[in-house]
Amino acid sequence: AFVSVVASARFDQAIMLPAERADASDLAVASILLGCATAVGVLVMVAPFQIALLDALGAPALAGWILLLPLSIAAAAVIQAMTIWTTRQQRFATVSAMRIGQSAASAMAQLAGGTYHFAGGLIGGSIGGQAVAVTAYGAAIARDEALRFSRPRWRGIPALLRRYRDMPLHSAPESMLAQAQVILPSLAVARLFTLETAGHLMLAQRLTLLPVAFVTQALGQVMFQRMAAKHAAEGDLRVPLRFIWSKLGMVALPLAVMTWLYAEQAVTLVLGPKWSECGRIVETMAPYLAVVLTFGPTSSIAIVLRKQHVSLAVAVVALVAKLGAILACILVDADYLWMIRAFVAIDTLQIIGLNAWFYRQLGANRGKA
Image 1 (cartoon, one colour):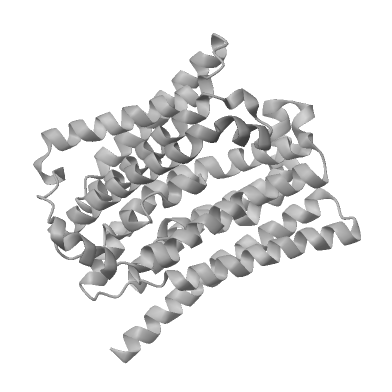
Image 2 (cartoon, one colour; image 1 turned 30 degrees about the vertical axis):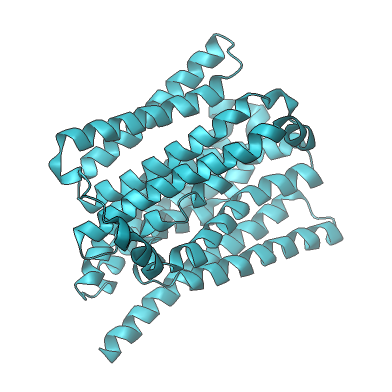
């Protein structure tokens, strides 16, 4: 997760921004090449030292399997660049088909691996899903002329990358901090409480966030394209923001209330009484569920406005606040639910605060214009 998200130095996020199609095409090509170069670099670093590395991580059973990591990184870079490129061309149905195909292929392969007790089922299924997506994107490019890249202008690519240097400078570290914030709760709970509690937390995160992520990612790609086009035309971005936030808020608020009131009973009913602890964690995450569903589809607003440094600064503050929350829970001997509540509060304030600041900035810029 850490390497894949920055494999292309986040230049893939800039594909949506140029006014000229040729510039966007060059950025897509550069992103794919950078991702593949990163994968080769990882292979060179991992292959000679895999035994020592895995022993240090306490996972010697992954010897051999870890050599598939560069392949997964390269595939992830290609898929991400092609997803944004395809979205820019407004081929939303193609993007949806790729996501569904990748998820279905991965799930079926992993289930088959578990059924037949194949040790590499989870890893093989993940790689297989990526392979399906890469192949499908290649086929889509072959049959759809609008998706074909322009002839790369190799001499102009360095200047193009310099124009969007804020992507590796600000978006890349912000993405890594975001990944760290996702992983931190599970690590903290596993270290300070029990592995069983950490397992309940991870299941609660999947039950809560995976369905929401499916919605927000699908809408997010469309909103990214719409906002980038409207901003390039100097339109008022506050109008689409108000529209999407109000509509999603009408869905998110009652869903969050129902989650807060009845999640424990629902999880216990479906999974059994031994998972009641997971249900209590899901209830605790209700406010975060509401803000992610409401504001998640417009998370690309920082990139559209080229204000990633603001997101980076807020991410640093949020990570420090979470580390402080962990320390406070240790000092007062609080239980794990208080730690999770603190994380949820920090995440909720981070998302609402960022979006409110961007909206205010849009109003200020509009007033100056």
